[in-house]
Image (cartoon, rainbow, N blue to C red; front, side):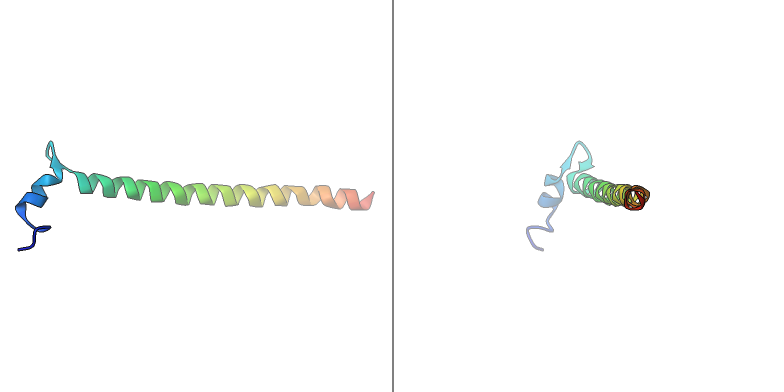
Length: 63
């Protein structure tokens, strides 16, 4: 059995009956989901910004 798969390494990543790697995995997934939501909000805001500017541009051209 390898050192990484040994009982020692398994116990080394458990603190107060909480597996540290599971916590890190959950935090990583939360960060990824937050990044996806933030990106979609930013792109949606930019689209609305440019769509709302379109009537202003046509009004200035008509004058």
